[in-house]
Image (cartoon, rainbow, N blue to C red):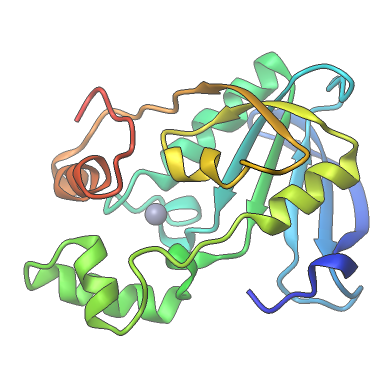
Length: 202
Ligand SMILES: [Zn+2]
């Protein structure tokens, strides 16, 4: 991402009622006219001085908005919103679509996957890294919110490793396991075998 991390700040906030309950909704960007700010949902009863449940979710328009079954992102986001509604906490929605390569390239990668490549190989075939996501912006947002200790909702050990040597302590992990579907079985197998995600159901 090209954002200047030091300038990232909360540009607007308002309460939004959702299917899962009310969330204080914040938009983080380096300027007030940024069209693609990171979005942050905060359960109104969240105690930031305690250990906070945090889901850091990278944008997946096909999964999150259109409920695609090629991946389980949308179901993970819904699960996290439900969990945080029940247990309080924060969702940080990072605008790094398609493991950081953007929606157009992700669709190109899907074409490669339909020819038999796995999700990692497809990104490489297009000239990208296996996973171009970064989590510095999430660290900046958590620090700005005054959060120091978190329970991280993830299956991805790399996301936890990104917090090594940071000021935020990951106290433990909360698994976000979704039942595999026929359409995303191969994708989830690659996540487990290639990216070492902790997926007990795959
Ligand atoms: Zn997805």
